[in-house]
Length: 157
Image 1 (cartoon, rainbow, N blue to C red):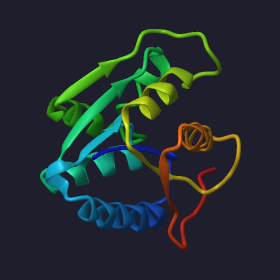
Image 2: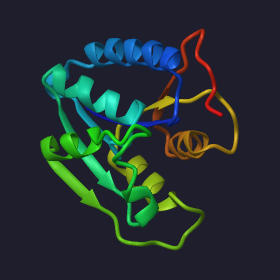
Image 3: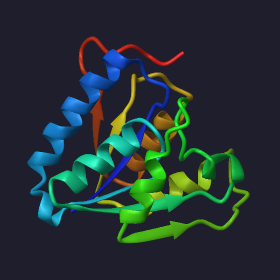
């Protein structure tokens, strides 16, 4: 099973705790030895999910966007670089060529949706956000989308 992840970055400590717990539970339901987590490994939900997949014996694949701005998302606000540690553990790294299709991140969205069987979206439901665009693309492609936004989560600023 190939499961993609997208999510808001810059979440509060409370939201992190709630989301990490739900992602951990979700990973246990997939039968981790057959699970391949696919995503950018960006700080926040994407790296939390990747680590949970690895902790349960699954594998991860990384999507590295072409744009320099997105490729720099491997460090969080505190300067920690969990994405680089995870990138070293990825069984495949998909480096995207620049594509001028839509807005920023369109190449990543199309690549992610094209590589997965299901999508997990850590998303507060607000339209116009990156998770919203990826969810819409996944639904258009006929993929099952699991939205993770536990009660008590705080939307990012």
